[in-house]
Image (cartoon, rainbow, N blue to C red; front, side, top):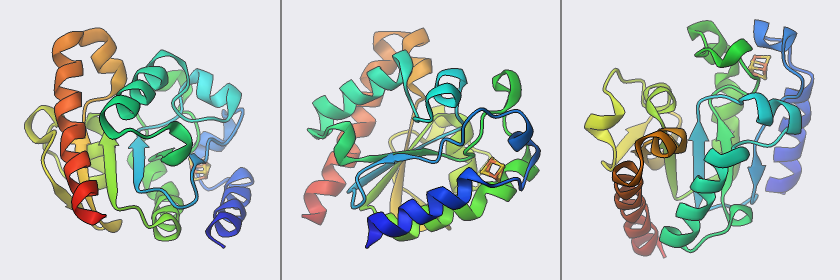
Amino acid sequence: MAQRNIDLLSQQAQNCRACELSNSRTTVVFGSGSESPEVVVIGEAPGEAEDLTGEPFVGRSGQLLERLIGEELKKTRAEIYITNVVKCRPPKNRDPKRDEIAACHDFLLRQLELLEPHVILSVGNFATRAVLNTKKGITEIHGTTQTSELSSAPVIPTFHPAAALRGGPRVVAMMREDLSVVRGILECAT
Ligand code: SF4
């Protein structure tokens, strides 16, 4: 039933024109993965490759995220669910605007209601601030257990994999530590 409902919600998003990002997008990148995931990953917004393919977190960033989740959580991409705060690509990869986040808010809220994850992983500064409605930076709160009005599931912020690609082993190591917090929550939940 969750799959059917999430598919219906995705179809609604494909036709959405609620904000100006609909004017420049190629594809609506709604989200993908398991219909009953223990973990939902939330990023900022689709980039160019995502806009062209309709899949979230493709390319080198996505591959790194997938590898770290595989190694630290023993989960494949198909076993989790990946989405973004806004479902359409901002032109030239600019940050989503406040009104665009507000326009897309219900899609994220309803996704989380249907998916009922045990834990949410917010990746990067922007997504974390949007999900937690906070001004705190990712360096300060990564790896901590947070709460969000979007879901009853705990939220663990971590760095964006693009930052890890730029920042090298030190950032990758911090992402692994953050994922170990996720692993601990999952172990307690099962
Ligand atoms: Fe609709 Fe969200 Fe795309 Fe804006 S970003 S057009 S609210 S789906």
